[in-house]
Length: 211
Image 1 (cartoon, one colour):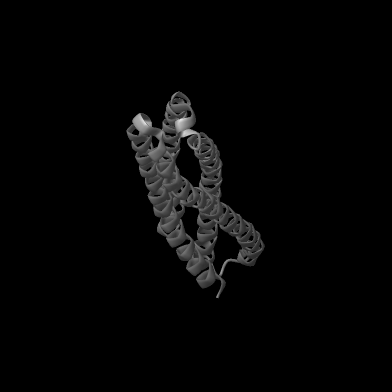
Image 2: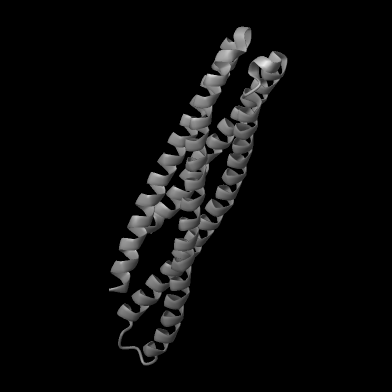
């Protein structure tokens, strides 16, 4: 049914957006390792750079872990949405039978089945909200990581100034990391916006059905 398409679209879109985030975080981790190698060659000239790269590397790895968790939640969200759709279809069929055969002798016996279907549907709606909120929270964690990473990158530029002949290489890597952080932030914000819109629509539909 058309009203349930946003659940499928949002979960699939989130998975696609976050797949790119995973790739960018992986590349960011590689850039950080390159910066570590240069800092090691620079020795005392880049003494303050190593702790910074260690921190950013940890965050890029943590971001990849969060993306994997989001993918799992997205799969659960899709599964729940599909099941809820099937339940709704069953309920609609019962309603059609009730309307077409309202004068049938035993038609009232269908009401018990319809009540059970409605109960099952309510349970799926609870799950739908649960996985949507979990996705939102995980994406919020990634966004927070990137905000911190941007501050750390700024500090890395300050440290690069003292690296003499290695300065240009370190600053170039810092720029690459900053671009990666911005890309991840933008992708996550896009996914959050799409999920928020879907959640608002689901809430309106659920409220309408309950009224």
